[in-house]
Length: 107
Figure 1 (cartoon, helix red, strand yellow):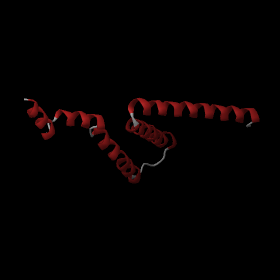
Figure 2 (tube, one colour):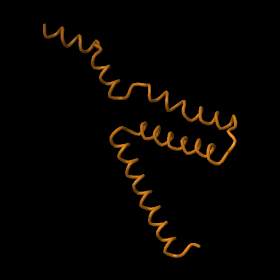
Figure 3 (cartoon, rainbow, N blue to C red):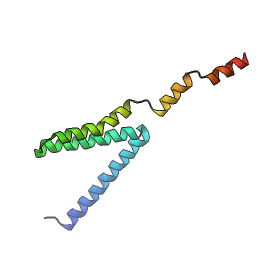
Figure 4 (cartoon, rainbow, N blue to C red):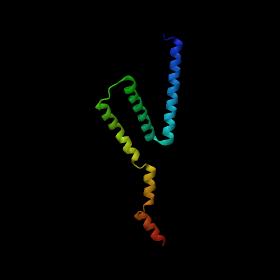
């Protein structure tokens, strides 16, 4: 039987765990970026989904697999592309005509 105190305990526990999870998500985003947080969140949700298949004997259909592929493909492609900082570093390493003209004017 659910008493008022049990309900309040579960409510406080749920809010505390939710706040802790949000704080962890914000920390991951701040330290590693939004893409890493998105992949981490997706992996957590996928783990929950797979656990539901194992523990509750849910049926895995081809729609589940297609949804996972559609959702994860852009994230994986984005994770392999160079970041803005990497692109900027590469562009500063490649000599441009303006850089060459400046160097030749000092010689």
